[in-house]
Length: 315
Ligand code: FSX
Ligand code: SF4
Ligand code: F3S
Image 1 (cartoon, rainbow, N blue to C red):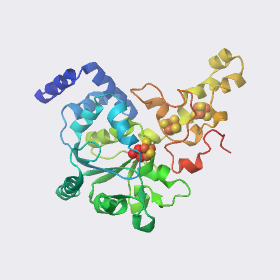
Image 2 (image 1 turned 30 degrees about the horizontal axis):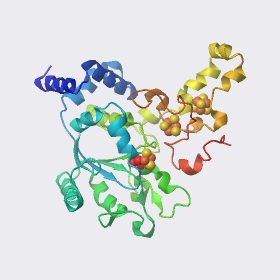
Image 3 (image 1 turned 90 degrees about the vertical axis):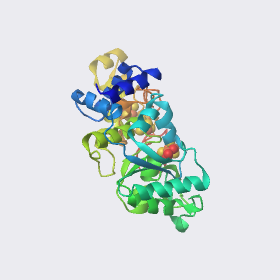
């Protein structure tokens, strides 16, 4: 083990995180990425001895900050620090100390210094009607800021359904003409949708980039296939209840076993692509359907319009 790695594990243990917990997390991340378990030590190395720390400029437009909150708080309490060790966050409004003009200057200088090299992470949708007048920061519209920053990045990663496809801001009648970043700017983006998305899918995308030197393979909606390749329904534990003879026996009849499924309560799992049943939230504790709530399709484009009313069966 290198000196750097020893120091890393020392720092983790000072935070009360055992090496075992850390390896468990790396195992979960490796499985989420669809890599074989032989990659676990390599994934651990990305955190423990990073070879490069890509500069990241993190923009926030119209959103609820749930995506940053999800990423920084609800998983392992120490993931924020791990993340900040493998990336170099040059600008992030929620966690930076600077404010006002000072913050504006930091953004300008980071974009100039790392032109073509930084990863731009975006949370939130962009207003496009009336020259973007529905959303401004520091006197500039979201649209202006995004046009200035995003094309200079090596890659743009949209975190959350809002940045990916517009989210709640784009719900009808959408007076501000809100759109996701890719559509508003006419550029290709990596989309990690969900309201909020599972942090492991963002961390997985960054680790994939650092480990394999490239962004993960995407579907036609810009979503990494490792996370969004299957529907919720395809992976749902409640589905197994009506497809498994043992459960059918336990419930007394096929109909009773089917009653355990939330489809009749409006579950949109069959139309929603995401890995919630496998990755789960809060350190792998649970996900909406496991907690008894139908999936509302929060990671699909236009879900506020297409998937609502949430508690009524799809046609
Ligand atoms: Fe949207 Fe995220 Fe939902 Fe909120 O940044 S995906 S409203 S959880 O905060 O953008
Ligand atoms: Fe499918 Fe939803 Fe029923 Fe699960 S609860 S089996 S996702 S319809
Ligand atoms: Fe969202 Fe459905 Fe997962 S509501 S969190 S995609 S189970």
